[in-house]
Image 1 (cartoon, one colour):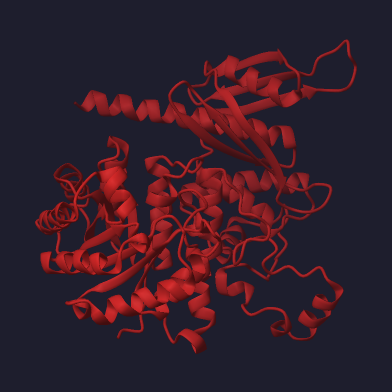
Image 2 (tube, one colour; image 1 turned 90 degrees about the vertical axis):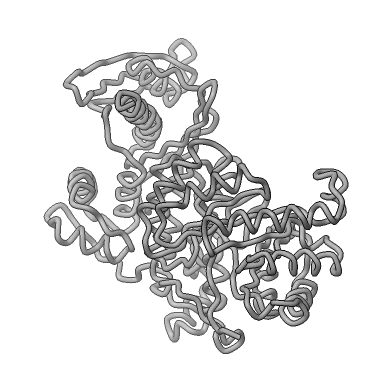
Length: 515
């Protein structure tokens, strides 16, 4: 049996469909390129039949990505499978992932189908998918709670129909490591045709066992793991890509297996996802959390200084966390900034470098020293899409506890067409006043659903990173901004949303004009 474990990353599908993690097509493409550079074997880019936006995102990613197989999810019905087939057409390597539920609960209450009908649907789905691509994956939804003899029957039928990958998902995060290892040992040795297919594990984290269960499945013979960056996904999330990869990589002595992941890019990919979705990584998150390589205990610090291996089983640089915290200042040039960004895992285009460099110089004038975390914050702000058409020309707020005076914000914005507009607004708090003033100027009345600020660097001149979630009557948006001024960071985050709304409107007008 091969020693290589394929990494099937579903950040853009199962991860993105979780509440609070939606992404635009452009953001999906940006993350797909990062996953490709990581060396992900298969990128599940979306669910083509779910919406025109999902179809377009998969189609675009399929055309742009050459180093990873691009996959679309589809139910076992003609419409879903045909949509997936069309969406992955431009791909150098494309896959259709089709599924149908098999457990008694799903058969009776969701599908209302007999066992025989489900087998027929599964076979027909795989056969139709094969007319679009030779790379067809079949999943038995809720496989863990399916009778073993019936699971065997469905899987064997799918293999005979032409499926090359068989996925056994723990759809509700119910199984245990011992149970799933035994199941995969059975499937990989007792199923007719098992030698000609790859068995895959897709584990959810409802009981906090997704990574442990995925690794146990690998020990049982699975050679593909379905996972998502930062463990995002439905309900409690999926198996975390970075955790399962680093477990296999760090414990080669135990698993005797390898992946093709370039682990040095993990940290940057995690940060990009957090910034795009507006969901920061918890400090204590394994592998990519801020505390993953921090040591505050005196005993731990002494041990690490004597020999890092006393308390670190991985090197920070193994996952792209730089230990060379080079200090840059206002006299540093573009080359130094680009080099530092590269060491942090970010490859900047010329336009991005120019934009980040301007922001870097402004920050360097405010701070005596600019550290890695400052540079990361600047880059992430640019990466998420902080470009115009609007930019903040000036902002001033007043706040306090005087009962006779309300917090007030005076905001002036510049538009790329040359306009400069200003507004003054009062509200219960200075941040709300700023947001209302920006809405007055731009003509976008948005409902603020959440607002958060966190410090991303240390000291009295620390960089603040703000995240907003806002909504219109029909859609929800995330925005992010960074500054040494907390209120200004919030204003940038709010304006980030408005800029994206306006840029999308311009693109839609161009598309409509072409037709």
